[in-house]
Image 1 (tube, rainbow, N blue to C red):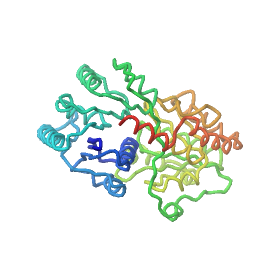
Image 2 (tube, rainbow, N blue to C red):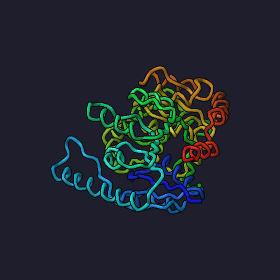
Image 3 (cartoon, rainbow, N blue to C red):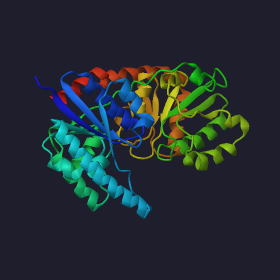
Image 4 (cartoon, helix red, strand yellow):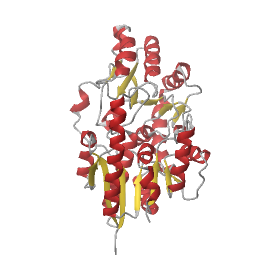
Amino acid sequence: MRKKRILGIFGNVANAGQERANSDVYKLLAQDDKYDLRVLVNDRGFHWCLQPFFEQNSIPFKKIRFPWGIYKNSSLRHIAQWIIDIFINNFQFIYNYLKFKPDYIHIGNEYMFKTLAIPLCLCRSKIIFRLGDRPYTNNSCNKFLWKLIAANVNTFVCDTHFIKNLLIQTGRNNPNDVVLYHPAPNRVKTSANETDKSNQRSSQRSIVFGYVGQINESKGVKLIVQCAEKICAERDDVEFWFAGTIYNNRFYTESIEPIMQAMPNDIRARIRFLGHVENIDLYYSMIDVHIAPTISEEPYGLVLVEAKKNHKPSIIFQSGGMPELICHTKNGFISNSKDIEGLIEGIRYYLERPEAIRLHGKNAFNSLSELGINFDNFRKQWLSIYH
């Protein structure tokens, strides 16, 4: 019996939530002997972060050209290179499509669909779109392109009901579309020495609030630092830790370092930026409460699932799809407002009720089963899509 062929389009080069989620899908498809998988990856950056995962999990891939984005301030040389890359990208995709003859095309990025819009609209393969972000419909051009995408995609796999509702608002309302919560990714385990040297509490009685993710404005990092300074000035039994890349991070250098440098030494010592942390389970074992005050409309919140897996309650804002994962004052805290006052409200809730931290952490872990977030369910639902 002929295996069903799946051609993946994966031009990403980073390794954040969206990339990890799509990589996990490719991993389970590669492990199933019913499918013949090939993933087209970026020849200018795939090796930076993603290639080791693909090689470790025997995910077949082939490198082709993918165009970088262009912006209002892009130079003429950059724009010319982008146009050349579009032609190369389309030609190489068509060549691989005709050679591989896939039954399905798997795509998880709106930009990549738009750059390949013509061949994707003309191909006969069923297109499966893992939608991990909100549809980008801010102007008439993007609205038109989204109608084109919606008309040619067989199934949208949405990370949350929030995203699916936004998809419906674009005019797409198809019974094929599903919501599938993504489980926490399996990260490579490293030795405990990786974080031991920096992740030591100032005091055994301290309550540690921990952030995990990108160090930028939209994730609420500056808000956390401002709240941390205020809380640490009031109490000496609280600390704030940040796990996220600060190397060559302009936001950190320009917005966070000046605030940190102006703090008294005893407060600054309890607000720690640890840089990139790969052994995230070890990190979670050393904090008490997870904080994720995303200001923008976060589509999902994979960090919340990871915190739940590690028995940690989360403090969040009313942001996008994140409230779907948190039950207020049962397995976490949903702040009333997206500002300093709202975040301090959640932090003080746990400082004033330390007994709730362990209970909410236990409830957070149990909620994964209630929400159906596990790899068995994830695998079963994805394979049913490629039936």
